Structure formats: C-alpha cells, structure tokens
Amino acid sequence: MRRNERNVLWIFGMLLLVVAPLLNYAQGKKPHIVAYVTSWTKPIPDPNLISHINYAFGHVNQTFDGIKLDNPERLREIVKLRKINPDLKILLSIGGWTSGRFSEMAADEKYRMSFAKDCQRIVKEFNLDGIDIDWEYPTSNEAGISSSADDTDNFTLLMRDIRKEIGPKKLLTLATIADGKYIDFRAIDKYIDFVNVMMYDVSKPPLQHNSLYRSDLAGRITFVEALQAHLDAGVSKGKLVMGIPFYGRGDKKQVNDFVNFKDIPKLTQFTEKWDDKSKVPYLVDSTGTLVLTFENEKSLKEKAAYIKSQGILGAMYWEFYGDNDDLLLSKTLYEGLK
Image (cartoon, rainbow, N blue to C red):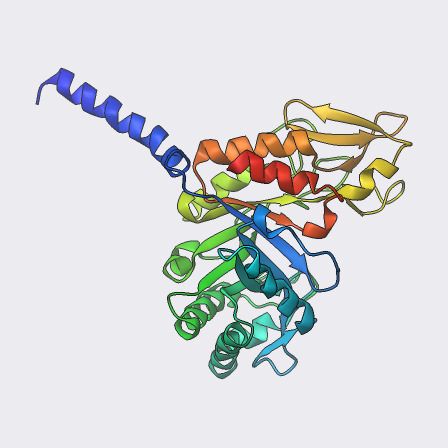
C-alpha cells in the first residue's frame, strides 16, 4: 500500500471516530430521557416529554429476600401513563440514599436468588418494563448503610441473577456515582441495558455540584469528567445516560440544603450569576459568595448540546417534582435532545 493511500485511510478512520457517535441522532433515533418520579409526590409527569420513568423507590426488605415497595397505588397510577404514550418505559428503581440491606442480600446466594425472583414478580404484577438498581454504593457505607469489601463482586452476581429472572426482553439498569467508582462495569456489561450517571451532589457551596466543564467554582468532578470516567471504566457510549439535577444545592446557613428549581425564584435576596466556563448558573450573597448551585434553561441547553455532540444514549434527571408548573426544564431538555 502506498504512503498516500495509508494517509487517506488513516484520515477516513479518524473521521469515522468523530462522526459515528452522531449517527444515532442524524438517523433520527430518539434519545433516552429518563425521569425519576417519586412515591411521595403527587404530580404526574408529561409522558410525551420523556422516554423512561424510574419509579422511586423499592427497597430490599427486612428479611433480605425480597422487595418492599413504596406506595404501590402511585406506581399503578404511573403505569397508566402508557395510555398517553404507548412507547413509555416504566421501571422500578430499587434503593436510593440510605436504602440498605443490599450488602447482606447480595452476599448470600439464597437471599440473592430470592430477591431476583421477587424482581420478576414485581415486573409482572405491575406490568413494568424493567428494574433499576440504585445501590449507593457497593463497598461504601457513606450512605449510612452496611457494606463489605466483597460488595463489588456481589453486585455483579446480583445483576446476573436479576437478568436471568426478568429475561432478555426486560430492561436492567443502574444508577452510579459520578466518579464511576464501586462497580465493575466490564463484568456487568452483558447483563445491563444502560447506566444512569448521577452527575449531581458532587460538591456543595461554595462550589458547584453540576458543572459541565471545569472552572474555578466547579466541584469534585464535572459532567465531562464523569462521562470520561465511565468510558474509562468500560461503559460504552451506547449505554451512557448522564444525570441532571432539577434542584439546587445550597449553603445551609443561608439557603436550604436542597432547593427545587421551581422554588429558586423565591430567593430574591440573592443575585444570579452565570459561570461561562462551567456553563451553569449560581446564586451569590451580598459578599459575592456562591450560596446556591443549580440548573436553568440556559445550562440545560448546554448539556443537551454536549450530550448530542458525544453521541451518548441520553439524559436522566432527578426528579420530575423539582420542575416548575410550566415544565420549563423538562421541555428544554426534550427540545434540546430531539
């Protein structure tokens, strides 16, 4: 092969690496938009603005061998949304912050198999499309739950057993910390459909918890860095869903720790700023100190554009209840990704 021919092939190969991630969008493939909807709130989301609902939460029961489901009647109400959008996928998310007993259940084969069978029961009984596991976090007791050094390996066994019970046609997903720690993604890859990256709560004021890019105010990890951490850990772009918060994190001395997006306009004593490096808004007090880190319409457009540029599967948000009455964030994300 001549040198010029080799150069042409090399350039063509590089172009494919750049263009290929964009083909899903160019060919009209709909991106995933995953909304967490909780058991303890009343509003019903607009099913035409989302592709998936993760119903929060189910929990490992007290005997370690099954599922305790929060507010079953609300889940049944959510399932009825398929009458409006027949393509809507609805999953039960099991776990959440401080939701424990995973470590004990996953470590014991009998408990683990019984739990996996109960996942199948729940899916069948409520006519669900799958299961989302939100174990925060294997091998860590940061959430105030029990843990073991064997949790990561046992997590893999758990995903294997759930997949076996629910079958290949149902969805099996998981939520992960932004850093991509605690999970052996290469080991679970054959069992899972996609990964929801919790790209929020990575820091608190005076730092941002949701930066797209690195800036002086960015927290422990940024959106771009979290995506790369998961790619490095073995998650393919075709299985990556990046999380976005519909709430802000505040300085508890001046603002509540958590502030839903719809409540931010009430904080008139503070001044809104825009970080043109990290591409997110924030509020400052009279001294110029950051007191609330959050998302708005402008920052969601930036994140949606970045998601499309990378050709990943889509976006997830916690949680629907945080949006305002006009569904500004939900609509912005939908329009930005379609």
